[in-house]
Image: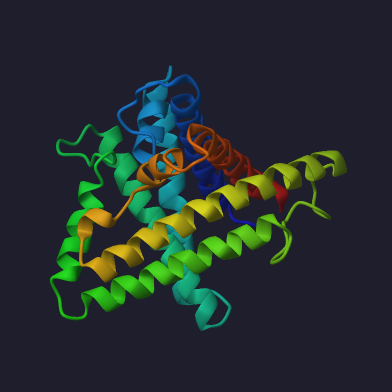
Length: 252
């Protein structure tokens, strides 16, 4: 059984991905010109809705809860070293997302702007200034690519098992969630693999400007031969991934 903190966190992550997919699809299909359409664009979209402050506050609380739960499990929970490392990485990532959302919620001046990736590039610039930084960045990029390929494999039914069948959900709902989730996992896996590719390229070229945010990856997809249609399909997939995360919260 999942803890209440994990359930709240998965719902919060699902809401962020649903908003991200909606904002990005609106840009791809309707040509809307939102300033951000990655994670920060999703958070701003939630904040701008009716009762948005309450919604974003709940997202911050959920993200903080799951970050704390995973970090504690990485130190004291069952499982081997690989599982503990995975929990720590997830917990750190959720904590960073919670911090970004909290800064926006509290209207902190100098909040990051995802459209130009300045925060990520500043970190990469520092890393590349060290003699060992390029190697570390390349390893990190390869790990992100592998994570993306793993999620693509899950979406295609080649690796892992989705948690909806045999649980407490009605069979019809479990089947529907499984179909939506596979689409979402493939889309997010492709996005992660692209993020990792850009990290590797930044390491090989010693060029922090090669790093992309999620919004930057979607822009890159829009400039492929498939054009905005590919970006729109990926955006819909990210929204489907949001459904997957919400489904995980309900499944067990």
